[in-house]
Amino acid sequence: MASDNPANQITAQATDWVMGTYARQPVRLVRGSGARVWDDTGREYLDFLAGIAVCGVGHCHPHVVKAIADQAATLIHVSNHFHNALQPELARRLCALTGMEKAFFGNSGAEANECAIKIARKWGKAQRGPDCHEIITFSGSFHGRTLATVTATAQPKYSAPFAPLPAGFIYVEPGDVAALDDAITERTCAVMIEPVQGESGIRIFQPDFLKLLRQLCDEAEALLIFDEVQSGMGRTGRFLASSHAGVSGDIVTLAKSVASGVPMGVCLARGSAATTLAPGDHGSTFGGQPLACASALATLDVIETEELMKRATAVGSGFLKGLRALADAFPSVVREARGLGLMLALELSVPEAKTLQRGLLDRGIIVNAVGDTILRFLPPLVVTDADCATVVTALRELLGELQP
Image 1 (cartoon, rainbow, N blue to C red):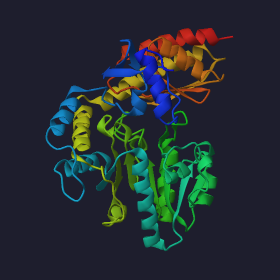
Image 2: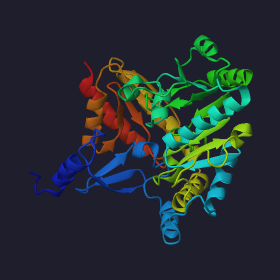
Image 3: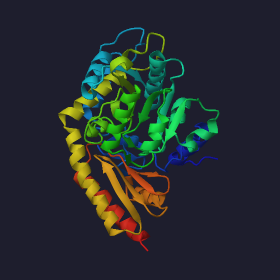
Image 4: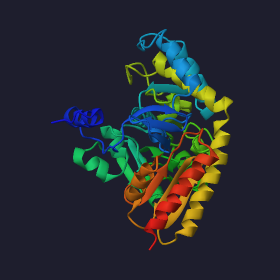
């Protein structure tokens, strides 16, 4: 029987009525502002997960809140059988920021990647015939939870329970140039890659590898798809993480922080890939509806006016320096600190990531444990140097307890 305690009732009701697909922390969050959230007891937390990289401009930014409220009072939804004034303006601004030419709007990163996959396969068949349908992805990637994107993810732990899986995905180990060269054939329509692999613990592809990838795709007449669902929207200090390498994809996908928590995913394309889909080929009931577009436009405003990409570079650099100092101070416990902008990780040499996650939560700090050995940090781009120092100090105390 559920307790009379309201908090316990919430947990019990979730167990009774919500499918058990999440291993939730024992916290019920009720309010957020900037880089902080509060639970139902009034306790404050420093949020270094940001809803898994979603609240990029911070929780409940006033400009975004006003845009959502104003739009909600005007027109929340209209189907894509009709035009709405906000969708083309958002497409224009995103294309200007990414170098792409056209946009398709969905509701999530998985949907954005589904669109990219469909474009690539139709494009490949049109270019080189019906056998040109294979898409190369990389081990350790994460592209979504739908049947196609979980197959593209190249991690059996996510896909094996749902076999048989869609055919046509080829997997290569990151950085294995010889295997990549062998994998690209006349059947290859695209190569799909995250410039920074987020879900596997902030694994960064080096610029030379991304440049080589662009060259190989050009030589094979295949599309290059950059999945920037987690790494885009300024998180790494540039609007797209791939731009650090000076490389442009043919297709780019965005989601996560694009609309500050209002569900939105975007598939952007250029060249012939931008005009591959025809009416009836693809669609989304809620994609690009006015409320989400208003939130996304306001989010772009904040990123630009508050210069949050510069902030991500500066604050992220200081935070990474602090994490590397921990690696130097605790060499028997910490293997490596790595990151780009405000997309960082601390990799341990002992299986204590979840212990540290719990310890930080007890100290009012939210982070993410990736498996047993990696802590992932994805704070809002409005986070401060002082916030980062608070996290480093707390980690220092906890690591000291683990040090032999």
